[in-house]
Image (cartoon, rainbow, N blue to C red):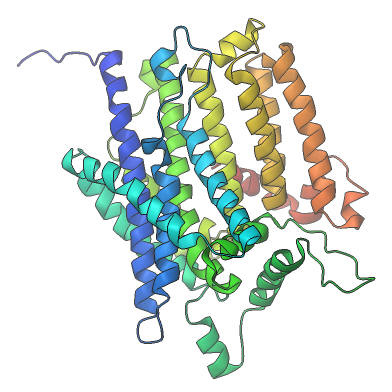
Length: 435
């Protein structure tokens, strides 16, 4: 038998472009599958094709951004002498911010730019998706299969939850009953869309203090598409944000694998089969009999939680890319120029966004940053130490801004766990956030 040759580390890194294309393709297939599933559920009762097409184009714009935008000098191809930061996570984040900017323009001009945005997004996605298909990726069958299966699972997990149901209004007209979350979430989004803050507009009525990040985002997307807020919740949220969660989960995992590869090749898991592992992780492997006894629910059921996890994973991905780009080494040496300041600013922005989306995710992320700084001795360097201090202050101020007065004025260590998480469930909660 011929002797088995060891895998060269340089050859293994060549798989990164293929992994990148696979993750983008899985997200786009999932977007397309969820769009088709919504249309099927509305068949015969009026299918909002225009909103579905706009949502699909918005998803394509974000997903295709890393494939279309040119590489930033000083990125992976110029790591020896470059000083600028280059990251697909930053490009995805920029694509999401671009949608918000276009929504602001739509609101300012009084004209929805959603159709033009959708056309631009679909045009951006066609070429990289076609290139991926022609390249006959080793994972192509798995990507397509998992994308279709996740779309089927997502259609059930998302649209069977009352206020997101495609037939919500028809059910309300027929039975007179509807999920109470419908009024709550849509009312908050409409307040933000009308007044710019959570208030009824009546003099003397105090504004509602609440983490309204997801409501604000979906109200902005309603401005972009020209659709009602309720329809934006039911269509744009699953079609755009669920695939984005899968994309950043795959990207952050791949970035972590590459960091481990550089430090310890033996710790690098094989890349084959990751689509099935991702799908199994999202669907869950817990037996139904056990799941009914535990506080477990699909992550896609909560818009605020899912979007907060997207931001947290993007922040983690940024940190891992910064590690690979040598920024951590330069910071330890006292060089805080180049991309280090950009990464620090993006992290602070992500912390604030997490707080307005889900306070629990923000608190766990800041605690995780502190743990990493201690384990890597980065706290001895000026920039990481300053980032930790500023991040802690920012998270505290954000907590006070989004919490009711009774909680914001009496904050103490572990306050969130004491007031909202039963002691017996704290380990499960921590595992769920980090898992």
